[in-house]
Structure formats: structure tokens, C-alpha cells
Amino acid sequence: KPTLGGKFTKLMEWIDETKTMAVRANADTPEDAKQALEFYAEGIGLIRTEHMFFKEGRISSFRRMILAETVEERAKALNEILPMQKNDFYQIYEVMGELPVTIRLLDPPLHEFMPVKEEEIRQLAETMSLSLEELNGRINELHEVNPMLGHRGVRLGITYPEISRMQVRAIMEAALEHKSDKNSDIQPEIMIPLISDVKELSYIKAEIEDEIQKVFIEKGKSLAYHIGTMIEVPRAALTADKIAEEADFFSFGTNDLTQMGFGFSRDDSGGFISEYMNKNIFENGPFDTIDQEGIGQLVEMAVERGRITKPNFKIGICGEHGGDPASIEFFQRLGINYVSCSPFRVPIARLAAAQAAINDR
Ligand code: PEP
Ligand code: MG
Image (tube, helix red, strand yellow):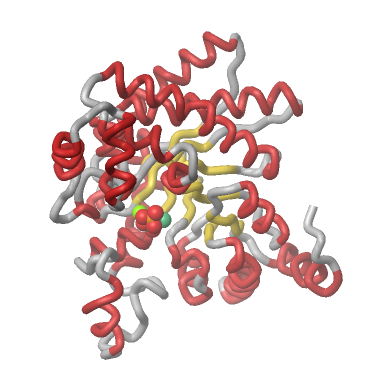
């Protein structure tokens, strides 16, 4: 229950009487989730699970998993990570109760997890019983020229299905445990990143549903769950009717959609891009406010196409634009069901959603 009270509570209650779009938060820790609830978030729209692996005490297992040469080595490291992931999800479920929580499977390029400090590399080589040369060779193999267009998102899940299986097992075990501990009705929402073709979704779904069935059989229990997808690659927006056949929900990753639609790199945002944006050639910074003429059309098209396949299809936004009032106004007109933004932007997003609902009447 939120504790802020007073005029803030009153304002939030008025907003609830007016707005039609839900506002969730992007949160990766129980602390973020609590903060989000304080600000009246109505769920979590995006857990970036990669953020969970940078924690002390588990980054080493994760590195060994990625750098493993054999299936056995990888399985051993994944077994170390599983209970930690399960606990991560359980704690977030504890905070959020039965509110919707969307957990996204691992997204970023693998080289981001690699050690850079000499001392860390030396220690890792020791733990893995490798020479420094061998380890550096394996690390170098992970570097890509265009990592944001490379081995990330669902592509990782397809090349290393065991990682997706571990994450899905952790989600399901945590949810089943919560269900029996608290008599709750949690329905996990599992989200697949960086889909560009429906066949990628079918492929990964077969893997993770097989794992889910294994968990249900082992535990002798089951629960309802939803498997959805990010729409963040232009081709996914264009083929949204086909993707909707395999998905239970969409969530637009407008950060990547903007990056790929404009052909601007998100990775280099500090250098040329920030200077370029300062030229004010674009009326709005497209990473701040959704570009209605271009990227917004991709969103609109995908909403329409998705809902031709499945009327009433649930659709959210989890890119940064989900916390931007001008973008929220646009999303309201498209009939988006929810936006999700950083916890501290939730009150502003809620106010913007109420305003947008009034203007849309
Ligand atoms: C996005 O691309 O908009 C998104 C939410 O995912 P990330 O920022 O983690 O790539
Ligand atoms: Mg993305």
C-alpha cells in the first residue's frame, strides 16, 4: 500500500477516475518495485533480467556459463545461477502480489558481461583453469562490430536455449512457490526480446514451453502464464499480424525501434549523436518523444495488424517514451493498454494518461 498520502493520494485517485490506460513501471529489483508501488504503478511492464546478473557473487558464475566450452560446464554454471534467479523473481512477486509483472528474457550482447580489469581476467582464468591466452581468446570471440545489431535478445535464446530454459524455470518455480505460500493467483508474463520474424518466436516458445511443462510435472502443480513479445525491430512491426498469432501480448521497445528506424546508434549516444541532436534539425529528439510521422506510424501499423489477428490484443509500451507526456497522448489515441516507465516517472505518466484520456473523449 502506498504511504505518501495527503494531496498526492487525492491527485492519484482523481487520475484513476479519469485515465483509461494503465501505467506500469520498469523495475529490476524489489526496491524499484516498492518505489513503483509508492507512486501508484499498476504493475511492472519490464524487468530487464540482464541487470540481475551484474550483482556481486553471481557475475562470476554467469561469465563461466558464457565462456564454457562444453555443455556440461555450461549446465554446471547455470545450476549455480538458477536459485539466485528464482529468488530474484520470488522477491519481486512478494512486493507486487497479483499485479501483472512482465519478465523479459536476457537481452544484451554477451561481451557486456566480460571482465575488463586485468586482475578480474586473471582470477577468472584461474577459476576456469585456463591460460590467460585461452581465456582472452574466448572473450575476444564475443566482441562484435555492431553489438546492438548482433548476438542479443531472442538470438541468444536460440543459440543458447539453456539460458532461456533456466530463466523460465526460475520464473515458474518462483511463481508456483508464491502461489502455494500466499495462495496467490500469479500469472507470469514472459517476454521475448528482439523478435524480427514469427518463426523466431515459434522456435523459442517451443523451447520454453517444454521447460515449463517439465516444471509443472516435477512440481505436480501448474498455473496460467502468458508469453508475449517485444516489438522493437521494424520488421516485427511490419509483420505484427503474423507475430500476434504466436504471442499473448506485445510490448513496444521504442528505444530500439527508434534506433533501428532512424538508423541512429544508441551505443554512441555521447559523441556525434548528442552534437547532431543539438543542431535541432528534428523538432523533437526522437529518443525523448515518439516520432509520430515515422516511428509512430510503425507502432500504429503494428497495433492495427496485431488486432486484426486478435481483437482486444493486449499492447503496452516499455521504451523510454512510455514516460513522456507527448508520447503518451499519441499512445492513447492508438488504443495502447498500458505504458511502462521508470518508477520516478510514474506519477507524471499517470497525469499525462489522465490528460490524454480527457483529450481523447
Ligand atoms: C527498448 O528497446 O525500447 C526497450 C525497452 O528495451 P531496452 O531499452 O532494454 O533495449
Ligand atoms: Mg530493446
